[in-house]
Image (cartoon, rainbow, N blue to C red):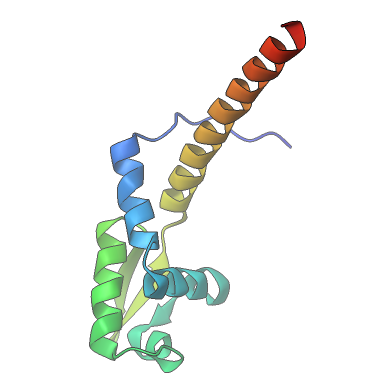
Length: 114
């Protein structure tokens, strides 16, 4: 099965995703949303070691990076992942990996031919 080809994201754009994921609490929130699906702040706070207000701040940071979004469901706000942004980050890492692979291949060729 082949992957569709997408242009690599701009490094400045990818940086906001990696900055948001660089915090341990935000990474845990993303992991929970990916694993357990959309959740309210109440559910996200249940197993967290921080306050509901802290979770709210982390969710807003993730939303600013485009990683999550919320929708109103009655009196609650339900948060869910935006997988496209994770795909952008993965493509950026794939681009860097390909550049390293090419550099290693050039070095190998230089050593073997030299």
